[in-house]
Image: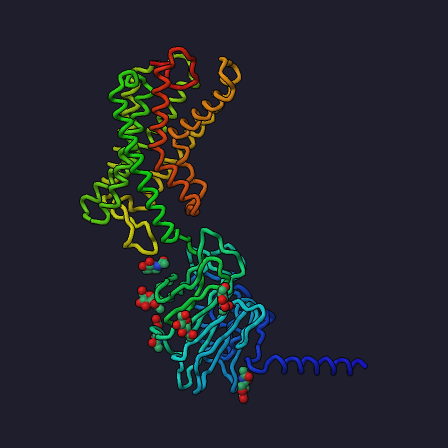
Length: 538
Ligand SMILES: *[C@@H]1O[C@H](CO)[C@@H](O)[C@H](O)[C@H]1NC(C)=O
Ligand SMILES: *[C@@H]1O[C@H](CO)[C@@H](O)[C@H](O)[C@H]1NC(C)=O
Ligand SMILES: *[C@@H]1O[C@H](CO)[C@@H](O)[C@H](O)[C@H]1NC(C)=O
Ligand SMILES: *[C@@H]1O[C@H](CO)[C@@H](O)[C@H](O)[C@H]1NC(C)=O
Ligand SMILES: *[C@@H]1O[C@H](CO)[C@@H](O)[C@H](O)[C@H]1NC(C)=O
Ligand SMILES: *[C@@H]1O[C@H](CO)[C@@H](O)[C@H](O)[C@H]1NC(C)=O
């Protein structure tokens, strides 16, 4: 009875294997049991005595993918390719699978007219597989005629924190697909080879897949000769390449689409122009109005206004100058832009400091030559920082491309060195932002306390309106809106980018409104006690 059962079972297994292997090559599972000393060093050649033992080499690669160094990994992959190319095949193709690798060796016949291959994590076949994650279309042109063999390898790195082949970007599915023809370096194909990868994970809005190949000479990923065919929402990506190598889909940051960029450019140009116009009017109002001119707070505001005028002016001019691309003028533009940006940051911080003096130390402050001192900080420190940077290396300033996919198209004269940019603008702004957030918190508290303690017959609604206006005004002066940069951590989402663009290019306009409101109040403030921060200390 027992024997009968075994016989039936074997027959069934035999029958099933016959059924599934009609067209595709039989699969050779290279199980982990064949591991010798895992994690060891060496190479396939040292480890596997038998030169035909591709399975042994595959297991070695399994180990290497788990723990090996970059050097070992590259060597092992090259060796495996070699082993599989040279593996004995007795009249049929060879398909092999192990823990992290699936491989196929294919010998084209005279009638070669291109073909399709499908692979999942554990299988490889000529027919579509139910769990297929990969499809490869090889062009007719590859017809090698004689006894050249085509090898297809798919490697999948295990889940670890390590970077894959030193890539600075996430490698999709941790997978690398290798295509090669024995003894040939295939490049410059007329009909491209198409590798389609099914996307099972959702693609983040800030990322997009990009087809790269691993160049074994330079040991890094490169895009040369590969086109990525993908539109957002599509659940597969096709890499169309004119050479055979090792391919991977890297998740690179998505830059806004050309249309979005055009709209953004338009918005920021309009916003900055409007800002510039209203800021200049603000200065004129300041100059012509004696009462306003005597107010210390107004003097602080007007310095911020001047810094913003310089910033907007240079920003507007910078891209024009970049288009003309004269090195000398571009250097000046970059210096001026950096300097006015820093001055804006410093004056925003000084607004915060001024607010602190008014609100927290309510008793009359008198600092000798107060305005002169803060002006030295507000204008002097930015000039010093820029001077130091330009003395260290003039090359830190120059032409910077805004569009990574098309470097020649949109550029601006600014800081070229990323470290300098991070340190002197983002780093500095972070400090200013923290300081001003604290000041803003103090203002909210102060307004709250005043609101509770004073009832001057004004209707509640009016008061609330006024308080909100005050807070919005203070927020603008302190540059809190600039903080939107932080919500996007590195790469702005499209929505974030639009918001940032609109709010900041309109900062000047908001300040103008605030200025007008304050002026009106200055005229009528004789009778009213005000919770405003700028009428009580001249
Ligand atoms: C191919 O055939 C030879 C002899 O005919 C045999 O020694 C070898 O093991 C076979 N190889 C494979 C991969 O089946
Ligand atoms: C790959 O795709 C491109 C563009 O879609 C096409 O021109 C080419 O013929 C395809 N290659 C193969 C081998 O089908
Ligand atoms: C292919 O290129 C590699 C290095 O890029 C070189 O070592 C090898 O000799 C080349 N093979 C052929 C057949 O040209
Ligand atoms: C790899 O990089 C080297 C050096 O830049 C280059 O000569 C070679 O063509 C690249 N390989 C491929 C397949 O593009
Ligand atoms: C790859 O390395 C070469 C030279 O080492 C460099 O020029 C190139 O920018 C690098 N590419 C990437 C994508 O890092
Ligand atoms: C890729 O996706 C598109 C649309 O989502 C579909 O039309 C196409 O057939 C898919 N291609 C493959 C090879 O699955």
